[in-house]
Image (cartoon, rainbow, N blue to C red; front, side, top):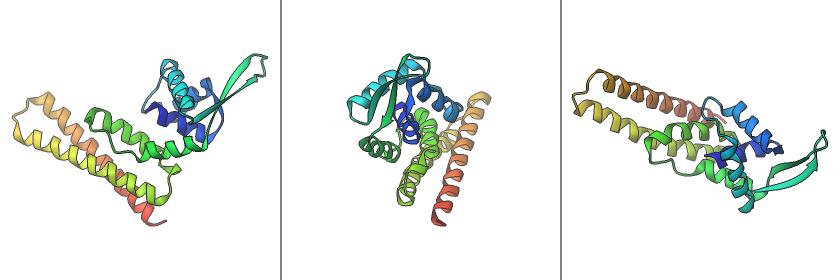
Amino acid sequence: MIELLILFELNRKILTMYGVSKSIKEDFSVLTTPSYGTIKPALNRLESAGFVRTQKEMSKGGRPSTYYSITDNGAKELKKLIMSQPLENPIQFLPYARIKLACADVLDTREQLMMLDSIKQKAESILLDAQNLVRSKELSFYPKMVFDNLICEYKNLISLIEGFEHACARK
């Protein structure tokens, strides 16, 4: 997920590591807040893979700064990450799906529709599993409330995706 966020931010502008961190926090703080300890190694991996390039310059304060920019291969990798199959683990699926949806404007309409369909299918599968669990077990108050809330979250996600699909169809 961190690579997706970094590439998304670098697709918009050239940034220092601090700028990457700040941009991610500004744009995605309600979904995730990665630390420098997560961002730095991810930037190194992205640079090693040829998705990001660095340029060292003197900052206004006279200190050397490293600026990161996305490469053409990095832009392709960004699209690939957004288009990738949804995660299987339901705990990771929902936040990652939301991040992919928030980054979808880098895709063309056909790619957006494919990504939306992929996320929607997985969300419907998890929703069905949760509904079956609630129906099949005698749950006490707290677990039942948790699973009912989860069912609502997935219904909301599916509704959001259907709204996006409708907007894409009108383009």
